[in-house]
Image (cartoon, rainbow, N blue to C red; front, side):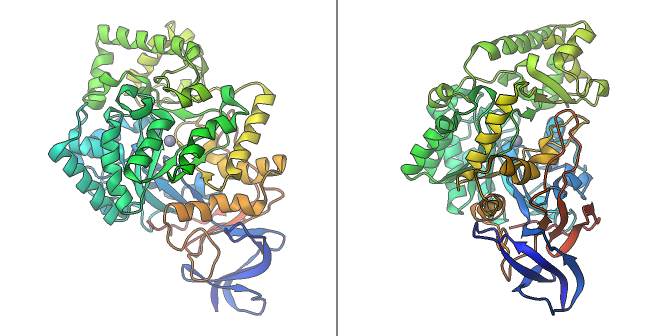
Length: 548
Ligand SMILES: [Zn+2]
């Protein structure tokens, strides 16, 4: 007697091998039998005739660390077929942090993560993981966040990590890895970790490497004079070379100005791989990104954290200085080479800039009427320059603002980029990270659409990768890379994380104009044997584990 029996589906098992017809018998949280089970008995049945049955999808880059706890049902992930999310991304998360530092960093990160419960446990990776275990609808894995580590060891200060401080940091990484972290994540656009030097990251990654963990990196474009190779791709590869750590590039793809140049974008990576560096990456299928504008303020202003930045903006001269800085950043964004161009990736990447003309506000809790409005328009409305408007909005929302970049209006660019994204995912070293930021009415559509867009819309349109292979990229490949035990494949003895979908109708419906739209074509999602989505509706069951 099974607990759940999925009958008659086409099984795409996560290995990349051809689909086959069969039934899947589940008991407790595991798959216990696969084959012809037509005569078997079960408490519940799922009819998968005409559908594909695959392992649950694994999102390797997502910013739901706080949102998962305030809305543990997490429909925006679950309804896409996501059964596991890897947290701690860009180094922006909450462990290990003392209570005081947690309050400081959660305040600082509100524009990208939202507000976590104040009683969240963060003192160690083990405690952090307990916040999620069997309390959310999906599984979570954790990468020790570089930002938290820097704050805990050095404070919100531009200081070197060396001597006893370095020993303390390495101990925290060792302890975190022993407590089940799957690696270490940084984002060298963001503070306080953007103050670090490559040599420090290499030292930290030596410990990550001892445990077989992964170094996940959002590339540096701040304080590039502190980086081997000037930051960007060369620095990330140097960390792999010098520490032997596995390197994983976050959201690595082409964009509007680099459309069609996949080979150029990958050339340094492929060269390093041929020299023995272990590299993988992830991407999401949209032309522009989304983040929080505070990250675009000059590095020195971040010293002292949120209150220090608010103090600068509240001061008349400080306000003018920051407004000028934003306006200058906007000007430079148009004359410096694109950060993702071949030239920039081969040579010194340019420093961080923000193209305000191309920025749409997505999350503005202090002035919600500006959500979905271009900064340019908000500025006209306010009778200010764009730099001044940005500073005023930051002040009004206590720095807690999000934005996305305007997507290209040229259909051919969209088409080329869609093709590029599928071409990148055809590589066996790439997987999918949605980079979801679940805040505001006009959040980026990637939060609701990434997986169905890849597996449905783009796969069918470009026909460059088989269904079996693309399923492998979102299941078996990430499970192997991040050491997620008994996940990522439909095999007996493995955890029953399962998605049932129609490969012909599966499609995303979220757009930049209307981003909070659930996809079509996924009928059932199981997480650890529990039916979490039934007939395309969330069941309310919260049986996600903290893994690996
Ligand atoms: Zn990110």
